[in-house]
Image (tube, rainbow, N blue to C red; front, side, top):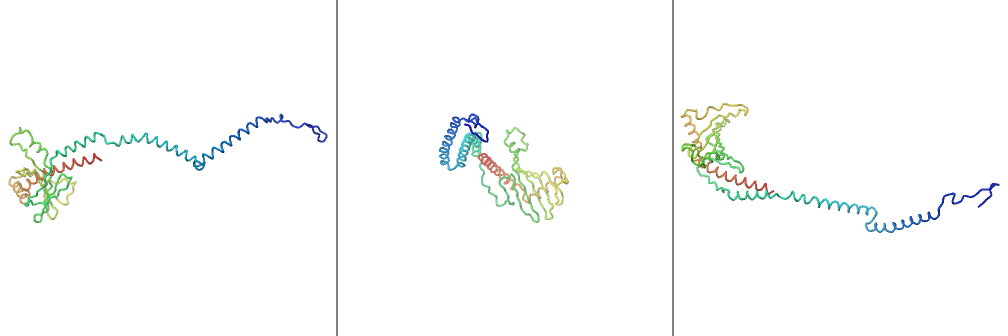
Length: 273
């Protein structure tokens, strides 16, 4: 096409000069249109199924989280169950303890004689008992321990030892006699079935410190024989005599059975938990 402008002849630009390709452009536009139509028809359906685009994305994330959690539970629950199950060795131990409880010597009821001069303080779970009484202006306390196991084993021996050997059952006592001013006379005593032996004797001052090493006197056996007899009489009139200690031996043997039975039951409760 030719045109004339102000005396000058000019040629109009042709399509080839602009690099324009009508067929290729039309195919591209058609493809884009088809994709938009497809997405506009499918996406709303998916969105309507879950509510909104945000809900759709949340739903997909939730499905993935549930699947991950399910997989984790399938993996770790067997491990938890494996470690929470009580081992068979514990069950065997419980059966052995139950058998020992059935075979253990059953304690008997304690019958305190009417003439017994002391009040008994017996706390379950403790190996000692405390006896208390007042005598004039004195306060007497006696701490009684379990029978000496070494003496019991010797008593149950084969009998090959000399007849003069001291293999009798005994219980240790600590006898404290206090005055109102706080001064205390303390005896270490071993009580046999037919004899009371004084092992030690000391005077405790109320103002004395535990850090001080107080003089406790000579061994009781080194004292004059008359002095030893006088101290035995001193204890006897205050209630430390054969009738008292013989009852205490039976009482403490029975307490030993009770404490052993309670100890076994506590073991069983602990292992069952």
